[in-house]
Length: 433
Image 1 (cartoon, rainbow, N blue to C red):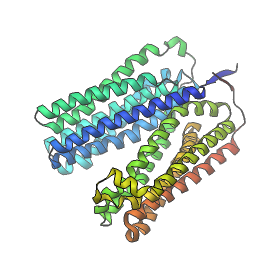
Image 2 (cartoon, rainbow, N blue to C red):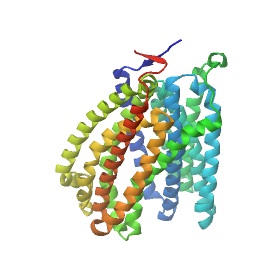
Image 3 (spheres, helix red, strand yellow):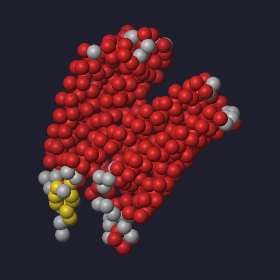
């Protein structure tokens, strides 16, 4: 019997994209405001430890949570029974991965400069890796069903309420840096617990999931590993230029370079929200007809590339005015990096469509995604070795654009290879709702 897979209408995808953008915007503003308060209340030495813990959290969630979430969106969008038959296995893998990451952090970060406060703060953030990644998995479950309103509203409410509570603790209680780290943990614990409760009420009983394909731990790892390695590689090649500026003696330009990244990252965030909302539909289309899925992804990417080109041209022409509007006079050199970085927008906007296609295609597409990002790491490091000594942060900006262009072209080539080897149809039909 042919299984029918229903595609979400464009109105649902657009509404979900708006909701996810709203989520990112509100949470970003709340957390940035909290960061500014901490800067004024916590000694720099304590702030250094806090930021180190935050970095461990971001890397851990980026490597562990995002890759597993991508697999959940891809598989559960095609078969709603997938979550019910594999949820406990995914949670176990998440726990094991978090314990392994925590051990690495303890050996390489905590032990070399051990202190009770240091170990407590880093430990709180390591525990948060598990609970934030767990929440990401629950949110991925809702995205796979094209239902994002509840997790968005839940996330916004938890973020605001727990942050306000944390503000009060930081202001009026001793050891503010510990309360700040504990507040981050508390937010993700509560946010995830609420989603878990709702999912348990919505998932089908065991009888309805009977007969669903069941993967082994080895199979799930085979799905997750290339996406994780690809995510690690992307994080490295996207941020290694900052470390190389420091290693080469240009650390006084890092803040300027970071200021140039802020507007680019802000705009990219909203486009990424659309692709996250679009991912379940791409997964369903690939399951039915990979060629059609690629054509649709390419058309969407082309439209966003045109929008990115318009944004890039505007930012490039107004880079000095934007810099004066956003930053103090001491950061006027930001315009020198903002101009080159603006040209990454059409590349990123369009390239993300192909990246999401590869990740949602399956193990072969995820493997290509991993290889391309590994190539991006090598290209970016070698390019920065040549560009930074002579052009400093401006050279790093141009190398970021060049690396984005190379990886995007390689992703397009990889997708075309997959399409050439793909059958035109599989055993599922698609209807639009």
